[in-house]
Amino acid sequence: MIQDICPHHYKNEYHPMAPDKNSFLLCYDGRKVLVRHKNDEIIFPAFEEAEAGNDRDKLYKDYTYLFAIDGMRFYLGNHVSCDALNEYVWEDTQIFRNANPKYMGFAGITGWQLHRWYESHRYCGRCGKSLVKDVKERMLYCPECHNMEYPKICPAVIIAVTHGNRLLMSKYAGREYKKYALLAGFAEIGETIEETVKREVMEEVGLKVKNITYYKSQPWSFTDTLLLGFFCELDGEENITLDREELALAEWFEREEIPVKPDDCSLTNEMMMAFKNGIK
Image (cartoon, rainbow, N blue to C red):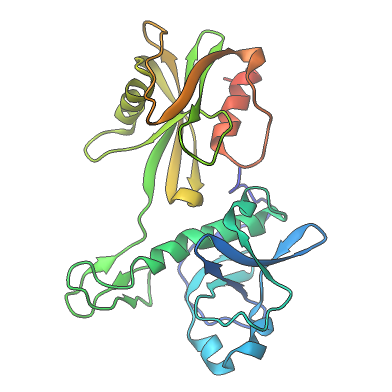
């Protein structure tokens, strides 16, 4: 999956040390990211490359530390002028689904999640004053009313509903993603994750399920989500009542006929392949 970057090691501890010339800048503009390509690999600009078009003193002092991978440190480049970075181009963040090297793709999409959080939390939601970065933890605080803001992660479930040798597969309604997927949905306030599984299946396809079994989790920075994968069995009738606002279709597939090919990105794909190959 997208976060499986071994032998590289992702270090998300908040250590806001100053960058050096080899540290990487992650520059975003909406859904665009600044990259260049070399030998089918993506490369992010280093601080040294940005010196030409920026005030050097400000460049190295006005920074937002993100995380490290091995000994490589990554920082937000929102304050950086990109005019001198002529070899770099703006591309859609969807490139990170299949980017090489994989650990750089993971860095890029994880940085985009943090970028969106910083962008949407410039001001205090309680009193409206400007928020300030904390020096000890990844937190923004308000000097006026002492409100504290931490990155929010939304828990959601991926649900593989099985019925003997068959798997329930669906397609989303009105979304860019047009391939087959599993049922999914966000947890609501006041319910357990297992209750989320039951509710989402009932809401989307009108079915009851039993024997809910946890499979695996995945951070999914494209939507600020922590995905929790579950397998469960049909409990009762198999006739589908489709929620057409959420799904374009939902249908049962025999194990051998599941229309999916392996990829190295998503929990959804891994779960579908696990059932198709008889692992689950």
